[in-house]
Image 1: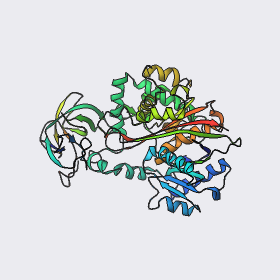
Image 2: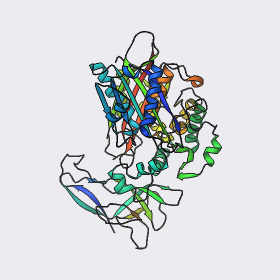
Image 3: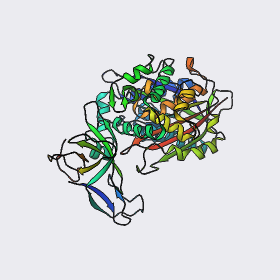
Image 4: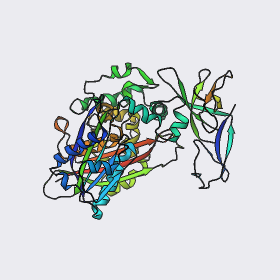
Length: 379
Length: 105
C-alpha cells in the first residue's frame, strides 16, 4: 500500500457537554484539528467519510456541505466501533484507485445521558425486541457474562482485568485529552461498585461527547512524518452470534493482515485495541496473536502490559479517555498514528509498527464487526 | 410454559432472534418451535438486583433472558417463557413481541 495518515485531530472529550452542543460541530472541530496537524487545508480535501450515531437527520453529504467540502469521494459508515477500520479500508482503496487524493475520516457523537439511553434502547431490532424489555439498558450485562466466560476459559481473575484498567489509567495521566487522568489503584478498582457482576465501575467504558479524525494521502515521500498503512482487514458477522464471543472476527482478519503488512505480531511496538471492557482487550490481543496461544494470559498482562514492555492503548484507551460514540474505533487509530508520527507528547513511545483493532455493533450477545489495521512509522 | 424459537424447515436448525434466511442452509422457510427449557450458562446480577442469564437451548442457540421468581446459577435448567407469568417458580423470561402484545416487565 502507498497510503499514509499525515494528521490526526480530536474534538475535546467531555462527560458533560454544554447545552446545545451539536454533533456536526463536534465532528467539524476534529476535522479542523486534523487538517491543521497535517498542514493541509480544507480546500485540499477531496474525500470524506464519517461515522456517527447522532448526526441525524444529517448525513455525510450534509456535513460535507456545511463544512464547505467539494468532493469526489464520500462515504458514511454505520458500524460503530468498527467504523474507523471500515472507512480506512475503503479510503486506502479509493486513493490507490485515484478516486481521491486527500481523504479525511471522522467519527464522533454528542453522547450525553439522554443520547446514550436512546442509543442503547433502540440499538437494533434485536435489542428493541429481545433485550431492552428484560430490561437491559446497554451492553454492560452482555459483556459481564462474556467476561465470566473468559475468566473460566483463560483462568483470569478480577485482579488481572484490574491491571489492564490501572495500566491504561497510567497512560491517561499523560494524555490531556482523556476525561479520567487521576491515578487508579488496584484496590480502588476492586472496591468499586458493581455494575453487572463481575464488572465494576472501572470495567465499563464511560460515554463521552467528542470526535476524532485522521487525514489520509498518498505517500508524499518528502520527509513528512507519517503513519503508513501497511494493511487493513475487516470481518463481519463471522460466527452468526453462535459462539461465545471470546473469539472476535479479528481472528479471521489476522492471518492476511499480518501477511499483507509483512510483519508479525511479535514485531508490534504498540497495540491500540478496542477496549470497551478489559475482557475485550484480552480477546483482541489474543485474536491478533500479540497474546499468543503459548502465553499465559495473566502473566502476559502482569509482565508485558502492566509494565509497558508492550505499550497498549497509550491514550488511556476508551476506558480512561472515554468512548465518544462511534469514534470508539477512530480513537485508537488516531492514537496509533499520533505515536508513529512522534506527536504523542509525554506519552510518546518508540514504536515503528502499531496494530489497531476495531470492534463493534452488538447484534444480540456480542459484537459482529471487527477490523485490523497495521501501521508503520515512515518519512 | 414455553418460548417460541424459530426453526428452519429445511435443515432443522433453531434460531433466536429470528432470521430472514437460514445461516446454515440459506433457505427461507421457517416454523415456530415451542421450547420449554434451557440451561443456564452464565448469570450476571445488576446493581438493582435484576438477574440476567445466558441460557443454552438444547440443540439450539444461546439466548439472553431474565431470571424471575428466584435465584439460578450455571448448570440449572429453567423453564422458558415469552410472558412475565404470575405462576410461581423460577423461570427465564425471554421477551418476544411477536408472541406477546403490550407485555411489560
